[in-house]
Length: 314
Image (tube, rainbow, N blue to C red; front, side):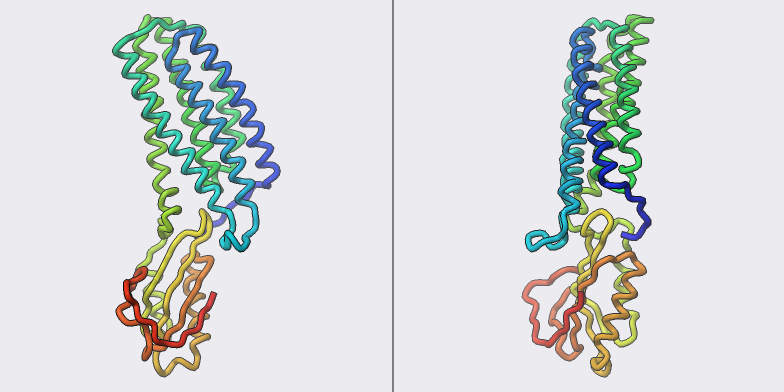
């Protein structure tokens, strides 16, 4: 992908994540105890979400460590996608939590229970402070990593949940509206589900070897075809290696009279791809007389006949 990224020092980032995990675990314990004592489902929901924050950060921490490993014979593109897998786990967890909160919130609306408003306010207020501290610790890193961004969104949604719980506590104290507690729970669940579904699509697209969202495949193919000496292009594969690198594989058919400068043509085609932010290219050069028969423009077609000599470029 094209773009300029501001990278955080890995060790400094690890320390921030470790600190965020510590405060979230402490907060989870306080919220669960407070939720049980006060009878607030919204506070318990916030506590469970906070626990998921801590687990998300632990997963993010481990994924960051793995992602920094260099490429080897087993993982020739490196281990950067460990962070993408971690993001998928975190978003999936958020969706499960959101659906569970919807179920519990509806059940509490049907069968209301008493709630200690003051205890809810104090615990939720403390939780809000911790959520904001955790979000601050991970905000900078979230700009550069979908893995950390997933963990960051855990905290943002939890901070909003804490605000909702505080509002619920005030309304319960002022008007005795115990139904506000499950309504706030449903609001927290709705936000969690909205954020998760809006983010998980890009993660799945990357894992499914999809093309970069901002890439224009037609324009990329047109630029390759426009190179002098190129007769045609086929077998084009455009995908994301990881969050910040994209790649192209393609077969380039060279005009009959231009075969003597095939290497130069390949170089110009590769240069045309850098304009689109392509970090890695593999180009197979074919003479137009012996090009693949029945080849598709995008991807692979079945039963392709290869009866030509070719030169590989990487």
